Length: 92
Image 1 (tube, rainbow, N blue to C red):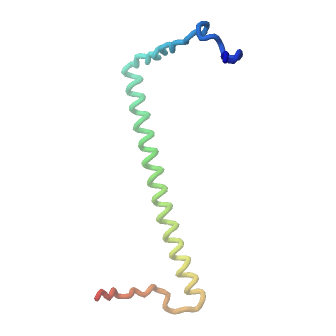
Image 2 (image 1 turned 135 degrees about the vertical axis):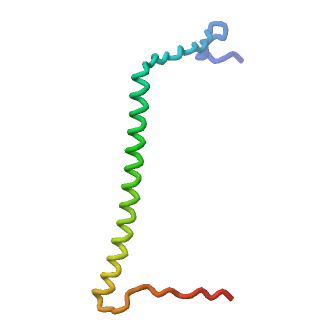
Image 3 (image 1 turned 60 degrees about the horizontal axis):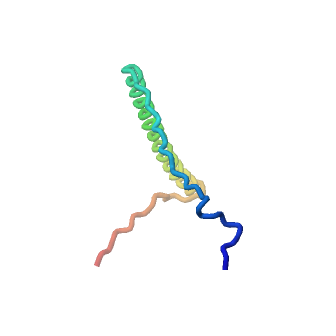
């Protein structure tokens, strides 16, 4: 049985080699550019810390407002003792 006609002749196939990619050269930075990069990094870090502090303060505020809302709802319903009761642990 002969090979199918749609396949190329193995003697006529050219093997392609991968060419190595040239590495891009990094430009040499001056001392002024290095100092600017450090200052930019410090500014970005300070902004990240500030944003994290704002998120934490916002989360605490939401928790406190939720607690106060539950207390107000309890008082508005006419109850007189709205504080949570702590049950003692009874480990036997």
